Image (tube, rainbow, N blue to C red; front, side):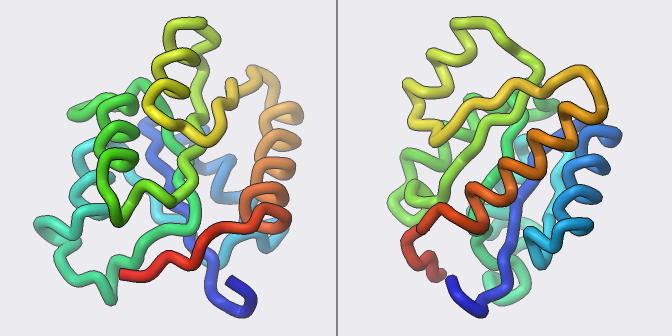
Length: 149
């Protein structure tokens, strides 16, 4: 991954949360590009190169996926299942980033092979700090397999 542009896929229907994630990553130059999707269906279309995302050159695989659980069209758990059941996608780290602290949601996410589960803090500064740490860990310190189309 050294020298390679870093692509983060953000699947988040809350525009304010998405803006904070994107701004934090840009400020710290954590990612070269963040692709934001407002619902689970468009995220799956992108990952599986369907509809307007059919060209893999224009729509490369992300290095990490930040996934909310409560999404329109296709729920976050269903998106996670589809990713982790696909041989070409399952090695992409998926970090669940949600407001839910419910034990059943945590258990379902890990049962479906989430790589991490983070609860969004309510306060702005805490949320910003979480994004800083998340970016540095998953995109700076963590070593991922070489993902190619």
